[in-house]
Length: 271
Image (cartoon, rainbow, N blue to C red):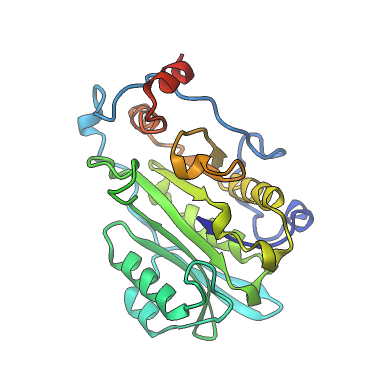
């Protein structure tokens, strides 16, 4: 459910906030929809998956000071709840909160307190100017299955209207995905057109969609096909997935089993 607007494409190609990150296969072109995985089945564990929960790197604190025309902005992951609760929120953060910054802050505090929750915060002079929220998927969604503690959702990303074109979206994604704790995990994110600030950016849906694929692609996310109704509601919607470089094949299989509820469609894509 991202809403972002960082540097434009020409600036990113020339370097800047994304410089120095790990190369992504096919980085020259935005990734297209990935073919469906083999081994399609139910969401029950496959052979060997019972021991799949152990191991991997623990979460790691990651920070970056971003020098911008507005001054130095601190970007940090796992922003402490106590710090979030004391923050002001820039009025330009408005898309998810329906122009109620207090409501948005409460939501982020909730994420920071939750098991596995990770708030990546961009702060300037004690004020929240951008954020990313990463958490376990809701149990109400198909992704929120028991026993999938290695599956995370990047639920929201927003940059204040007053702090755009400074590279903040890229800096937050870099800080978030630079955490080795996600190297053996799978992270998904959805981009729904009704959350996009098309008015504020002057873009149309397809331009904004291309921006999302391009930017997230630089941090290991690729577009995947699914029959999830909220995703298929609009052809411009996005469903992006980051498969950690150390994630086991059994995790790939189990995640693949969630992509299609329609068994016939699943069989066709798995063949």
